[in-house]
Length: 297
Image 1 (spheres, rainbow, N blue to C red):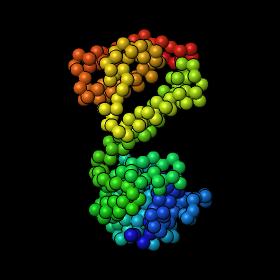
Image 2: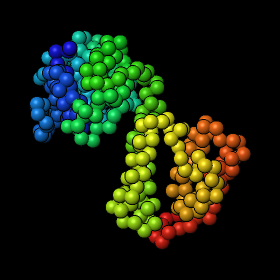
Image 3: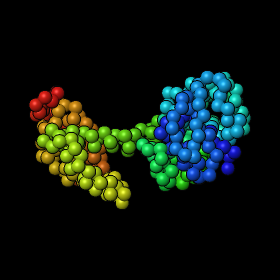
Image 4: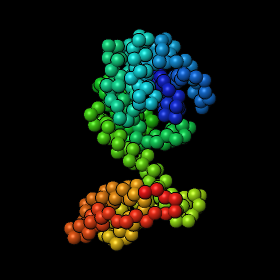
């Protein structure tokens, strides 16, 4: 086990990861720009890490993790390089899902091992992170020693590490965004449409929750192509046309894009060519838009 793991950035990801590592038996140092409450047993050192000197604990840490937003990683790496506290024996990782070791390029002269560790999990509540990270997969990338250290940390937290190259991280992270962030967005769109049908915002979400939970339950047991239901999967082109006729322009564009993706799944599942052609035609047809009162075009 490394002497200590130092984390710069006490946001949700940084605090959640620090708490998980502490509970796994690691000595953890956490650093932020200003004072804030952190869960026990964590303690926060404070100071602008983007100016010299670096955190006082830097020499004690075997692994240093930059838990800051993506565009803040290169400036923070620059500051650590200027401070001179990063040594060849260090491993420096960041948590970005889209950037690779190149984001730490200014630290190359230090001869430290550089890389990234991206848990494929959402952390909304840092105090639940130790449980949420167990069983999650984690993308690791970088120099060999950095990859080894990242895999060791991931396994200690109960995660399953897998290796990526820097060139593939963008498309990997886009997939993660679809799975998590845009899933939430789609549910918000569904909630809004039910509101336009006459339900209150609270009622709309209460009505949708059992459907969402049922869909998630299906996905826990089946691959997406096998869990797909609905008018595209049934080849119900008449229903698709009625849906499109009821939507505003922006919602219709989203419906069509998702409908084409659903059609690909249906075809993989064995939909015949004639039915697929009817569905594709329904999704492509421009229909007069039925505007709700006050709705935009």
